[in-house]
Image (cartoon, rainbow, N blue to C red; front, side, top):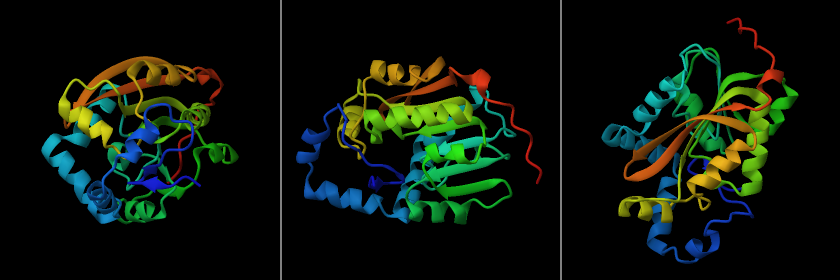
Length: 239
């Protein structure tokens, strides 16, 4: 079972971008910082601070709206953590994560009809036959091996009509961005070209928006499943 860091997936075997070298050089002081951020309460406060100072979530939400996300659409949030993006819709929202501590915090802070948080792998959604207007994969893929990314994207392509991906990239023009990526808990940050190529395996990429957050260069990507025509329309849920 993959370990979780900060509401996301820890790296599995198969990462091609500097996994073992960075791990070997981590100091005890940094480990203590990461251990603190692995606290649900500390991580939530840190995220709120990021949004207050840098607009970490507000700026991404603006990009999501520019991609066509409306408040009535159904949303699948893979690697939802504490549910930071549950407010993107007033309609159906399903957040998936493997860390029950983060899911408990998400359930406590986001309570309304139509919103759910499950400890579940996205590939098992096939058992329920539910489809979504939009799937969110935010700050997730750089925590996953290449093989795991491929599996997640394949599952999401079968369950959603569009995908919104926000990911940091290996190319960082600013020293702060290079430092933060080098010390990120996710050890599979990929070059821009590789990230887009992996997405293109299952999605037709229609928009790419560069976004700098706290000195870190990232990409916000809009894609449509290549088999989108096979996804049936989802009837509206009755409250």
